[in-house]
Image 1 (cartoon, rainbow, N blue to C red):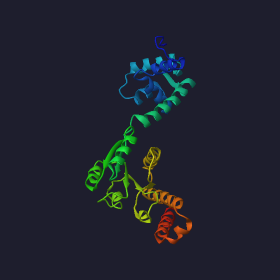
Image 2: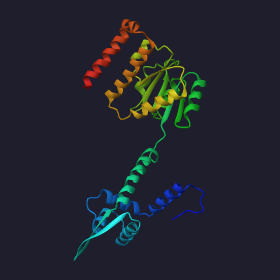
Image 3: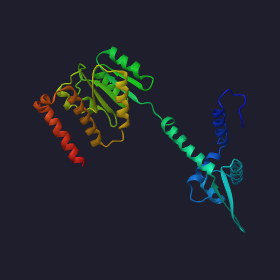
Length: 272
């Protein structure tokens, strides 16, 4: 079928022809069953495909044969037994269906993640919302009451400042529900007290849109980690940040930091 009336490139027309071939209700079903089933006789296919009638299956197989996607081989004449299998073209089309599966995984079942931003400055939360609301559902909180109300909406990632009046930053990770991830926002020179806050990541202000988006991507991609892997990832990220901000001599003199390194070492040993 050629869509002569469409002002599109030939490659696009060919794509439409291919999709038209698969538009029959049972065409892609039969192709997939033939690609993944162990048996391919007519009755085998009839049993493997619920709700299809013998006539519809016969018509579908005939159409796929005419399209060069399925071969029919007679195994015996009495009683008549036939076998169906994909042609090389049919196998190539099945490979293309795998790309459809990948697209469906990424888009059909996609759920918009919810991001909660906790800052005392409303101008900042408004700015973060403008950065993110084209991709995510964004919640904002500016005090403890708003924070607890927003947490009830089960956000996927929480960005929270270390300096929100009435909010103990150490409590924020504790009141989130798994698998919610937490990102602590601190000043340009993070204080050593932040090492005791069990956030999944630590970021220094001022932030850029690209930094925030990258942090969200990292946290959402780590939802399959075990609890120990999650904790270790957060600790190692903080270690890298502190090594960027302080000299090795300064870090060696800080008992909080040495205890922090001991925690990383113990957790690493327990996972090996």
